[in-house]
Image 1: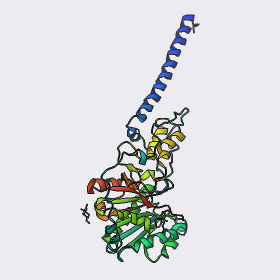
Image 2: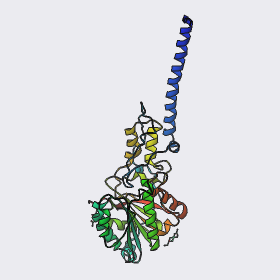
Image 3: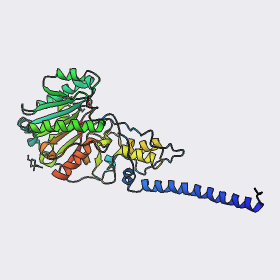
Amino acid sequence: MRMCSRTTIYRIVFIALVIFISIVIGFQYGIYLSVRTTTNKSLLSVLLQSQPKSPGKSSVLPQPQMPKNNAKPRKICEKYEVSDTRPFFDQEPPQTNLPRRMSAIERTLILPQLRLLRLAIVACAYNVEQYVDNLRKHIEPILDLFHSSSRIFILESDSTDNTWEKLRQWSRAHVETYGILANTVPKRTERIAYCRNKLLDKARDIHPDYMLVVDADIFSVNISSFLTNFQYETQDWSVMTANLIEKYYDIWALRTLSETIVNYDVWHLSWAMQQISGYCANSVSRNVIDIHKQPLRANRNLLEVRSAFGGAAIYKMNATKDCFYSGKPYTCEHVLFHLCMRDKNQARIFINPQFRNDNLR
Ligand SMILES: *[C@@H]1O[C@H](CO)[C@@H](O)[C@H](O)[C@H]1NC(C)=O
Ligand SMILES: *[C@@H]1O[C@H](CO)[C@@H](O)[C@H](O)[C@H]1NC(C)=O
C-alpha cells in the first residue's frame, strides 16, 4: 500500500468531475433528443418503438392502461405542450367535395325508398343487461323503416350479469351466445374484433343494402337523427358515423383525413410519450386526448375521416366488401376495417354531426 500523493488526489478528483459532467450532459441531451423526436412531425416514430398493453376494457370508452412492470418510473418529467389546442374537427382544413344534400322533393322519397332496402343491425353484447331495454326502444323503430326482411343480430359473450337472459326475451332480435370467449380469445380488443366479424358474416348472409353497427351500451339514436344520414345523396357516401354532441368522445376509433392531426392511436401515443419520452402523464392526456373531446355541434358540416365510430355507424354493405375487423395489434377494431374499406372499395367515411347518439337514457 502506498499513500496517495496530492497530485494523485487532484487527478482522481478531476477525472471524477469529468465523468460526472459527461453524465449530466449526456442525460440532458438524451431528454433533448426524445423531446425533439416527439415534438417534430413524426410522432409515429415513437409509437413504433412501443409495445403497450391492451388499451382498455370497453370498445366504447377505452381507458388508458399503462403497463406496470416493464417500464421504469421516471424521476423527472417534461410538461408536454401543443401550440394548437383546438379539437381535431376545428384543426381539420375546410373540406370541399362533401356529399350533396338532396332537394326537398328527393327527400320526400326517402321513406318509401328505405322500405325497399334491407338493413342488418348488429351489436356485440357484454354486461349490458341494464341497457337492453334502451337498445330495443331505439333499434326497433329504425328496423321498421326498412324492408321486412331486415334483421337484428346480437352476439353475447363473457357477461357476468343477466345480459343473456334479458336478450333471449327480445323476440325480434336474433341472439346468440358464445359463453366465455375470454378463455380462447384472451385479449379484449381481439374478442371484440372476433364478435364483430361473426356479426359481419351473419349480416352478409342476408345480403343487406345497409348495415348498422351499434354499441349496445350507448345506442340512443332516434329516427329523426338516423334519417339525417339519408338527406345526403347516397352515392356520395359509404359510411356515416355518429356524434355525441355533449362531447365527441370516441378518439380511439378516430383517424382524421389530415395526415398530421389525429392519424394515430391516441392511447399508444400517450403511453409512449410518458414511458419513452418522459412527458408528464397529466399534460399528455390533456394535450393528446382531452383537447379533442369537445362538443361537435349538430349544425356543422359533415367531416370526412379515415376512421371514426361514436357508438353507431351505418355502412353501405358493398363498401365493406373483402374487409374484416382486426383487434391486432391492440388497435381499435374499427380502424383497420375502415382503412381496408377506403383502400379496397374507395369508401368515403364521415362523421355526421346530426347523427346524434346522445338522447337521454
Ligand atoms: C355499390 O353499389 C352501388 C349501387 O348500389 C354502386 O354504385 C357502387 O359502385 C357499388 N360499390 C362497390 C364497391 O361495389
Ligand atoms: C331526436 O334526437 C334529437 C337529438 O338528440 C333531438 O333533438 C330530437 O328532439 C329527438 N327527436 C325526437 C322525436 O325525439
